[in-house]
Length: 137
Picture (cartoon, helix red, strand yellow):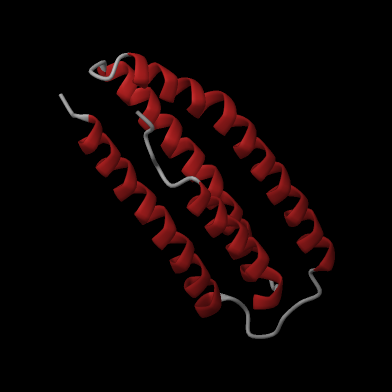
C-alpha cells in the first residue's frame, strides 16, 4: 500500500509531465503552424471565452472535488480508495489546466500567430503551477 509520500511523488511526476506537455505544445505549434497568419480574431475570442469557462470549471472542481478528496484522505490515510480519489481528482484538474494550453495550440494550428496563442499557453501553464500537488497533514 502506498504511503502519502509515494502518492505525492506519483502526483508530482504526473504534474511535471503535464507542465512539459504545455511547453511541447507551444514548440510544436510553432513548428507545424501555418507560416502565413490568417484573420482569426473571432476564433481567438471564442477560444478565450472557452478557456475562461474551462478555468472557471477548474476552480469550481478544485473547491468541490479536490477539497473533499483531500479531506477524505486526511481522515483515512491508509485507505486505497481515498488515495485513488485524491489522485484521480488531481489528474482531472491537471487535464483541465492543460486543456487551456491545448486551445492555444489549436488557435496556432488554425492560423493564429504566436501573439494570439501565448495568453492561452501562459494561462494553462499558470493553472498547472497553481495545481501543484500538495497534501496538508
